[in-house]
Image (cartoon, rainbow, N blue to C red):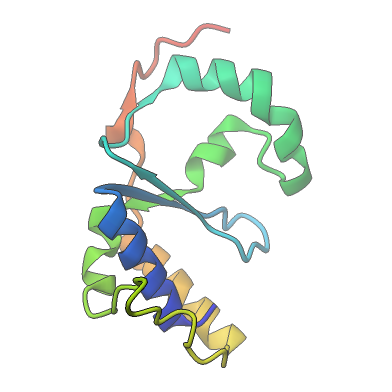
Amino acid sequence: MPEDSFKTLLKTFHSVFPHVSLWMAITHYNKHALIVGSLKPLRIDLDLFLKRFNQFAKEDLKIVNLDNPVFFLDSFKMNETGFAEWVDSAPLHTINHPVLEFSPRKVQPNIDRVRSYELLANSSMSLTPFITSLGTYKN
């Protein structure tokens, strides 16, 4: 996806959800990101997450080598404060201004990927402040 389109996508998504987190596994070749929106700030109850991860997600995530909960949690890159400045100048995609519908499809794969990884490298943040019940999990 072209860098400008990615910025517009993030900014538009954030205009709907006040709290947004960007997740991307960079432990292996991956060209996909997960954007999660919420009306409430991100909070992860570690005990509950580990229980549900092992019960519902672990097997399905084997195919992308994210079946370890630590690797999965490491795919968190930032919340809305991490990308806010980066997307500030991007236009919003709306019904009346569908900029993504008519954006040029000229993708410069290596350049766009490098710029996206640059954002992740320069703005990534720790997930630790968003985790509750840290250290209380029992196998």
